[in-house]
Image: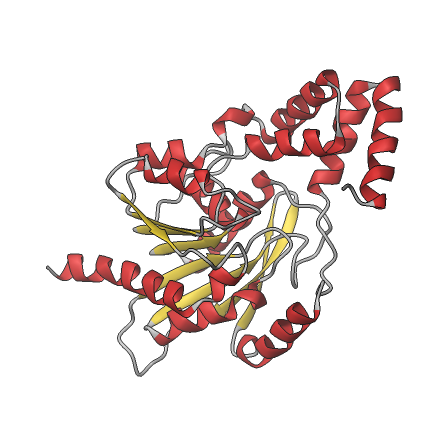
Length: 302
């Protein structure tokens, strides 16, 4: 059953849609691109954020600026007592923040990696209340330029899709940045489904849905169908680890299967029972990510 808030939103959109489907489509995009509150939504999130404070205090904060936005990077240097394993860019998902990935970044640093964890615009310590895929890719580009590139990418949910788009150069005015290895955890394989799902939830008319998708393409400067990280992966052939749970209720398992079908360079790892959020902090998942990235160094040495 729809919540009272959703019913009110649907009623508002129905009224706007009757007057102007174009206005309804643009309003839907504004709703989509507005980032959620940064306050923890539950006691579990408050506990996680509190537990991460000590770890996050080890990072050097670096502000990144790019056309249309700003982002905060958290730089964890490699441990001097360990052989430097490479530099990894870690990106969180929608409504999350770098601090929520402390178990993952901590595991990578413990394995000898230098890590940069990004707070996307409108999230964590970054300013703003808006995030779009072009903005996310520009933030990744700014991090790449500031830190002199990355050996590996690792992203959860929306962050994984953004890293895939950045690697493939799907934003026309941003150069492609190809890592040696790419890891996605619970990530969508393409973005069109998000807007289809949004239109379904808001009960947009066909005309308003078309206006929404046209506005997205105007903002992005490219057809919506181009934002297909799985198809781009098939072209790039960068070794890729796709971690997903078949019980993920936010990003369906068929996205992982689409990645897996991109070619033999993609390793599909099922982490069933961990859902969409617990998966990114699960010790077996972190161990699998570390092992996968470590294979690059082993191959180089061989």
